[in-house]
Image (tube, rainbow, N blue to C red; front, side):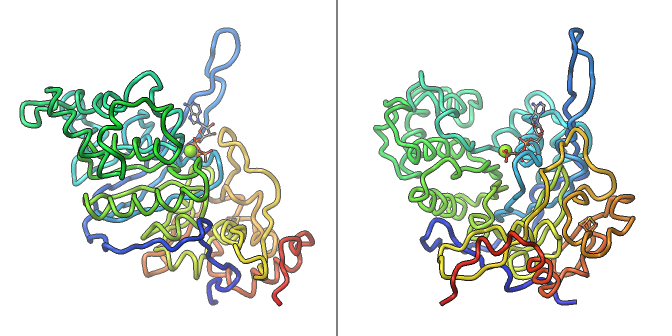
Length: 381
Ligand SMILES: Nc1ncnc2c1ncn2[C@@H]1O[C@H](COP(=O)(O)OP(=O)(O)OP(=O)(O)O)[C@@H](O)[C@H]1O
Ligand code: SF4
Ligand SMILES: [Mg+2]
């Protein structure tokens, strides 16, 4: 059967053209194998272990040097936890991550410190992530000081200040802004400072955790374009986390879709948008609004809320909300067995027992039978 097409009209919510290029290499930079991160739930007066949040549950991915890998999924599905666990900002429950062949999870002491320089993070909240009591020179300089050695001489104030100024300029700010405090900047400028802070350490890999979602739409494309320019200029590799599939489309080479702690589909960006095969990906794509109100668009409604990651459904975690399962007459294996990621060729991997049943016709049929759907349809004329 043909995979889904046409149902989804990809859009750019920022409304402006984003420029891309700079092909990724064929070299695996970050190799994530069977990573799990569980959080204990403590309860009662004695703070006993009463449950477990399965935030990231057996994720394997390879991120190629020079690429932007977009990671999408609803709130609470484990995107941030996965990013933080890869960077060792959370201690892993299980699995392995290697960076250019070095086992990240087993590093200790000086070796771990050295590795931290190579892997950085840009946070979602440009307000909360900068210490309001520090001037920008110290906010960016702090990390440099922590990583100072004889070779880089970042321990010397003059060397540090020079570098802070250089990186402020690299992100489009004036070097003399280094004397100012965070409250003197707009949201977009603060995000630029956050980017300069990560970049000044000379990383190879950056986790961008929803770096534009807290910004005005008008600023979003500026920051996305900046990140893209910096990726090329500094030969960076990004794990780009987003809710918004539109942002990911214009910004990523490949996309991974997460649901309740698991990766359910991975493919290059064109394949995801033209021929998604996981019922969850198809539903997410159908929810992306079209900026042109005249464009007709079918939307698949997902029933119910996302289940708690402390009590995930058995078998396929998506089965409680899956429109395809319902259409197929609720087959038993959706509830009984967890579908592994299956290779559909061309770099597309899908975790669904019935991915081959997903087609444009199926989606349109299901969409047409859902009564609320037409609410978002505009007038094509
Ligand atoms: N330190 C923690 N202790 C306990 N539970 C946590 C902790 N951090 C995250 N969680 C839980 O793990 C799950 C995944 O959270 P995470 O923040 O990774 O999701 P997310 O996909 O980044 O969501 P969002 O899109 O809202 O940022 C959530 O249920 C969250 O409540
Ligand atoms: S395995 Fe079943 S429940 Fe899971 S996505 Fe596929 S059809 Fe839906
Ligand atoms: Mg998050």
